[in-house]
Length: 524
DNA sequence: CTGTGCAAG
DNA sequence: AATTCTTGCACAG
Image 1 (tube, rainbow, N blue to C red):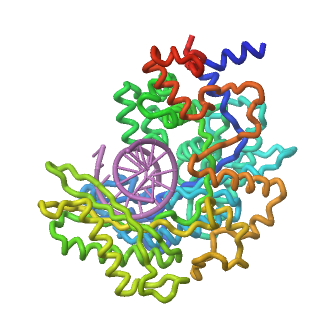
Image 2: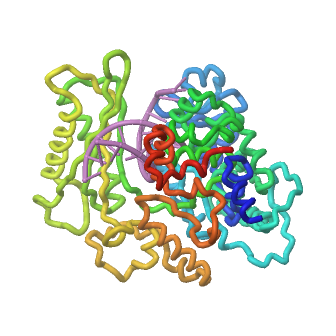
Image 3: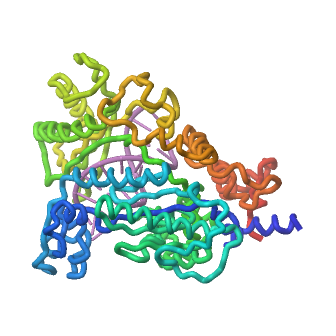
């Protein structure tokens, strides 16, 4: 009987794929309602009740619900927005400072519920609250908020009860955000990030929705088009359409080999999994940024002296952010968008090391750039610039950007991530560059409060971090011992790609016998 | 290590 | 699709 089960699992059908689905986490996705507009209304309450649009350059980047009711849409041009809605009030949203500040406050509150918070942009966060769920839930908690199309199908793994508890916690989180910051939010509660995000969007302003796994496929199929799956962007969508894949179902049942040819094994697997609502990616704790940059677009500039001027201006802006961050970068990158031939603009970037030590006294803190440093950076930048444009010929540049990176890692070698800060606390000035400005986003007290089993989880996270070069490596512990049901997917990606290569030139390889694995995976 | 491409909000 | 601007990750040479 075991043998029979195995052979079934070799086939690529929904059963085999779904068998890899797990419900062992409770993830909340929190999305601030029309974030910029809410911030503006909080800062200036007289705007409440009026249709409000936030403008950047020539467009309304977002607007409140009053404006939406009157026909204003996101990313609409100012002109048409005002035509549609002459009473529209506009606030300038080009300076992101106030939004960054609010985003940080939100993050702090979320962190008080769980250390596992991942920021997505300024207005979205994932929170893994699995560890806060009562293992022995005697209590028959009721769901707080909406349920997505409940079919009363109960999963034997007990996830429904955990999700119910999760919905109560989500409600608490949202209540606190409202009470302390005056901000309304939407939340989605589900077993993975994908589903949490999608289900949260099903009831829009100021509500929350829970998804029980029995309804996962309904939710994902309700998206209709693959492009609507987070993780599938415009480029992937083009390739999918070229393959004739324009529905979720087609993506689900397209031969994996076909997808691998187009996307490579990793992406192919990932998007097909996503099409079934499966997403094993972890909530990755948001740490300090890995790069800090700024860029500016403009009609067109043609001379080096104009470039130099723009760069100085940009450098001032970026350096302000770098100073606030407190860490010293070791790399600079210059981004250039140039107008090529007819209408077609192309972005290119060049990166190089920078040395701040020359002519600087303090090597502990960073402050404003002195004249020497500024000149040096600008020179470096201009050298990079000459790598992207041939200054003998004429050129047109429509965007310039500067980005700093290569910040010192949290601890000596490979683990440059967040969690270390639980352990490298206040008492250790051993870091080469200890910013006086800001302490880490994590209190070690948080860790100490954690029950022992949670600390265990934290330790597991640490294991996962140094392997950042090869990304996720989830759930090794409870993999079936004898035979794994998801054979192909679990194989190292190189092997998967190899299998594809084999198929292409199979005649040659077949003679090589020993690693002709392909036969095992062919459909019958 | 460097550069490109893709995705996200 | 790209508008705008910013960040992060995967991949390849």
